Each structure stands twice: as structure tokens, then as C-alpha cells.
Amino acid sequence: MPKTHEPDTFAALEKREWATPEVARSYAQVFAKAADMVVPYLVEAVAAQSGMRALDLCCGHGNVSAGLIKAGAKVTGLDFSPAMLDMARAAVPEAHFVEGDAMALEFADGSFDAVTIGFGMPHVPDPPKVVAEAHRVLRPGGQLAFSVWCGPEVDTALGYVFGAIGQHGSPDIGLPHGPGANDYADPKIAFPVLEKAGFTDCRQSTVASSWQVSDPGAPYDFFLEGTARGGALLRPQPSANAAAIRAAVISKVLEKHGSGPVWDVPIPAVVTVATAV
Image (cartoon, rainbow, N blue to C red; front, top):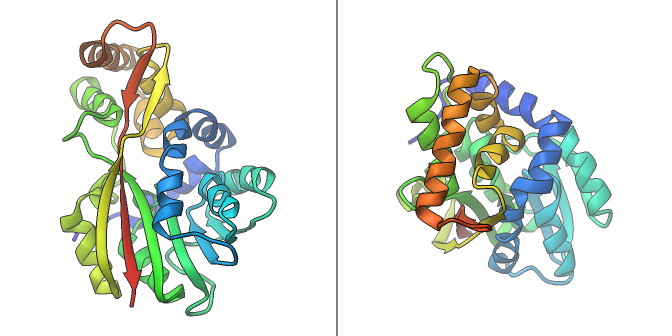
């Protein structure tokens, strides 16, 4: 089962990057335009309704929390990033937000009817612990729904950017070994973890999320400025490498999606749903 061999250094990287206000703001204002397209699917997956007790793990700037609130749920959001939580509290004052660790929740067993995780699974050192904690705090019959970006085996901006890094990036720049960014989009990985934790009725669907951009190099900029792993890989690149990476992303966007002047760049996601027993 995929698991980091460097949990402390990986966790430190994630916390440092997401605690940076500029990274958090860039994600919320730009990168999350694609993530926002997935929110209705998460809300529907847990059958959010009036009075439901919902826990939004890795809540970030609160976009999933906002969707749950709109459906009538009573929402608690949790994240490890103070910068993200500041934005969430401002954007969704009806929800209750707390700083905490998704792998060690300070909630009683059976406290919630639903748990959502919007793109948070790859940002923790041990995703199976998050799944186990989600099961513990759910009542029997409660729903867990989480989203993960599709991997480069499909047409996705993620593949354009990380493919270009692999081609043109400096071999001297790397990351601490952590969970694969797209591991939990794969049912062969996700479903056994869910079942071991006590979930049943596991299912997945794909959401055709995308970015509308007027610059074919925008996906490079989005990953540079508004992600943890992407930024940590791209910011230290020598200028020649960075220029080559961005040029390769531009070339891929033009090749796949034509000459513009506006490009609909796909960054699809998988939503996984399971029921606690």
C-alpha cells in the first residue's frame, strides 16, 4: 500500500507551503476554480441536507464547507493551515472551523453523519489514517466522500505540468517521498483502504473539471503559485529550466486544445464515496 517513507519531512513541506498566505490565496483564487466544479458532486455524494452533521476535512479555504452549508448541513471544517482557515472563516461564517490533524481527530466516535475531503488526501503523510479516523467519527450508515485529481494517464493539466518537469526540470531538485498525488483516484488503491477501515459500498465517478484560460502557459503558473508540491518543484528551478518547462506546457496546451484565444484546459477529478458500517 502506498505510504510515505519520509513522513516528517513530507508533512513539514506541506505545512510550510500551505501556511504561506500567498500560496493559499493563489490556490483559492485561481487553482480552485477547477476544484469548485467538483463541490456539488461531493455535496450530493453525502446527501447533504438540513440538520446533517458534516465534517469537512482538509477544508482549505472553505469551498466544500460552503456547499454543505447551502444544502442545510451543520458544518465543522478542519485544516492544518492557518492561512486557509482565515479565508474559510471569512468566506463561510456559518460554519465552525478548527485547526487540527486529519490523522488524529479530536472528535468523539460517531459525531458526524457525513465526512468530505476535497482534494486533501495527497497532502497528509498517511492517508489510510485519515480514512480510519473518518470512519471512527462517522455514525453507522454515514457517508464519506473525497475528491482526487486524475493522474497523467488521462488528458489533464497535471500531466502537462509534471510531464514537462520530468522532461526539463533540474535533476538536483526533488521532493520528500510522500503519497502519490493521484493514488486515491485508483480504485485498486482506494477501495482496499476504505474496506479495511470499515467502509462498504465503495464507488467512484469522474468529474470533467477544467480551467478556462487566456494564456496557454497559465497551468504552469497555477502550479507554481498555488500548490505545495508544484511550487516546491518549480520555484527552485534555474531560469533556463523554468523557461523550458513553461514552454513545454504551452506547447502541450496548443497541441491538445488549439490556437485559442481561450483554452478550456482539463484537470479532471475522481470522486470516491463509501458508507460506514
